[in-house]
Length: 238
Image (cartoon, rainbow, N blue to C red; front, side, top):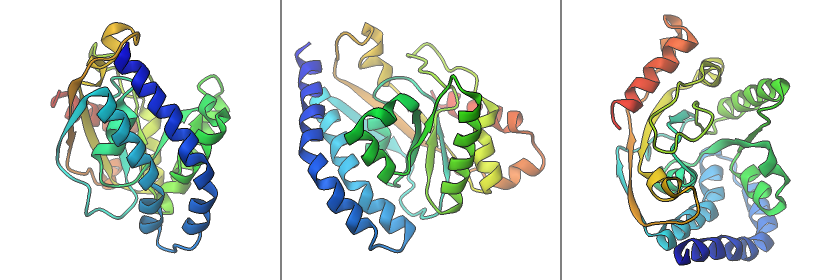
């Protein structure tokens, strides 16, 4: 319980520390013209946040592969094991990205403002119209040169094996005509989900960044076929 309490205290304390800085960061971002440079600058605080969480939770991250030299917008697709997936990915991927989040998070003032800087997109799973808007927002962001991370399983697997990928998520890559980057993540469920999130234990998480899949794949394959292919690439690495 001590490790969990310490990590939660850090999250709250860091939020209090960075909230007054948001306006300054927003102003500086407006002065940067290049999309990749702007996203990289806006990603600095989230990276520090993720690094601090992982350090206090005793989580070591081992990464295979890289996205460092890719400055174009891409759709990053990953399996979804546990609560630590987001901080692990922010820490592991050199490339800045936004991600699809639950609509409820948008109601948290300090958090939503930082997520907006990261070009995150919100989804209300109870509203079909929200899914359509999410696709529109995601396609727009990708076409502008931002990168987006999605978890096509929809919910955490909690280490019990991957669920099927929802084909609709892949409309983002098809409509925006951007590459898909499959990413495997293994070990986050061992940190909390194994214990019903009532305690936290240290551990090692493995992240594998697979080669990109060209958007031309949609010329010969349906959304579901592409979803299945990406699912198999990730699952075979776990």
